[in-house]
Length: 378
Image (cartoon, rainbow, N blue to C red):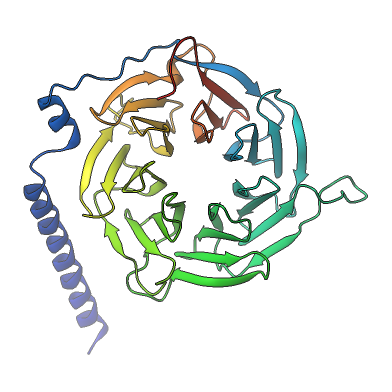
């Protein structure tokens, strides 16, 4: 068979795949005759009452000299770790704004960071394709820096995201530009399981984000540049449990809903979406409508409130929307407030008790937002 014939067959096959994909999309839309917002509206549900004084910026954490890329809270809610373009991890006391640790990294190109469940260690990863673990209780070296206690090597692409398995300081999951996710045994430094890669049910492009189910730590979801999210069971690495379609751009962020039966996604297509784990159905779309020069701001990071009624979404244009997840309405834009960030929102996260939100930005700062006045935590 000649090269030209192979090219023709490839083009024909691609057209067939695209037509089938569009047909599948239409079939899904026919099956989904409603969404959460329309159902809730029909039931007479009213939106959350929320105003500019209900979530207020109480602290600005200044110390990084480069863009903030990632952040994470400790389970006891009083400390935050952040990773920046300046090549440092900083551990902050969220109550006093003081730095407890400033760790200069072996590789400055860091993209992600995470606290261990006990708060004794932090993990980070980036363009060196390694996930580095630091024990915060270790003695410092002669230069005053904290030594690396474990280096998890094995990815063939950058490490984009990492998260410790809940209630375990000994295992964590990473996602990577090599199209895979990996479950690590930190004690031995060995890869316990690899999800994707040569397996056909894996992602076909860079994996950007992971989220572990807090109700069932054997399940986790991943988001990728292939515009899909995939659900995995750590006991069956050879295939994804389910693949979730709907986005038309990179899936930058995934986060499980508090009950573990649903999860949210944020994408370059400017939308957040809510999916049902059990049925695979898309339940709701949260779409950014304020487009400047027809440019759609990308969703960079998402988080749910402790009840799930609110969805916090950070955008590349500096907006930070607080969505009513039930009615798909924006109840507040933190980006429009006077003391908001001056750059894109690159990451955000909610404290374990749900009382505070932390946002990180390309303006090099982090901000802590707390429920103000008589506002109850939702």
